Image 1 (cartoon, one colour):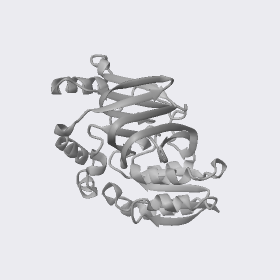
Image 2 (cartoon, rainbow, N blue to C red):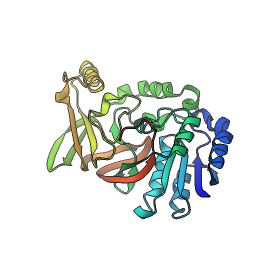
Image 3 (tube, helix red, strand yellow):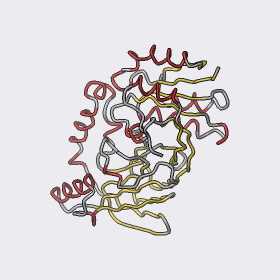
Image 4 (tube, rainbow, N blue to C red):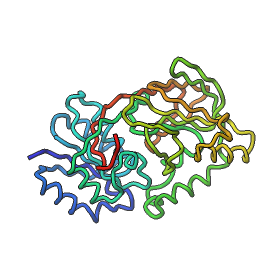
Length: 302
């Protein structure tokens, strides 16, 4: 029998895994998987478990939000590349941008059946100094929303919880002076927001990361917003960003690169895959090409 580790966050996404767990386990059992099942108990629990399981499993399946998937893949990145098993993902968070980008169904039972089908994809994974991230590292306007929003509020309101938390932070937007180094270029300016991504949507918005995104091309997308003069201009910039219109593109900086170095005058709070990544003054982000072998949706186009 094939050996499977199933790690799940019992609190993620209104705790819906509790109603589907038996059906999912029965499906894996019926398809000849010998299972070890582990509900996470605390932050970094999934990371430590996976990190210390090299060579033990043919496939590691996780269920939860972006944070659970981040911990799982980060744990695998400690393995020798040839020892990394397949990764299956059953999303149960509030937004699940990365799962959507990979064509993984929202319905948990359908996602489990997708794992059985076994269509695999070698996906790029980012590094953020000494940490790893799957699809987004960001700072600035609204990035604190993901970790500032309580799990209770997420469970009650879902995606609306992020919107409510974001409204609270509108008056707290501050510019940061950054030096960006990428592709042999250096850009120095004041920015209110920046992100380095490998996804087709962020926060449920598809157009925000630009066009022509490929998750295995060895390149991530950089998107940075320069300081607006007033709230009206900020609104115009955001509209241009979301709709990919050129109206305020002078305030937007887009690029693709396999490595980005950022230096700031002051420590800036960063978020990776929805989790707080500390206050940083110097960051080097790199792309680890085709580092994770993930099971994707049947209709996903490579």
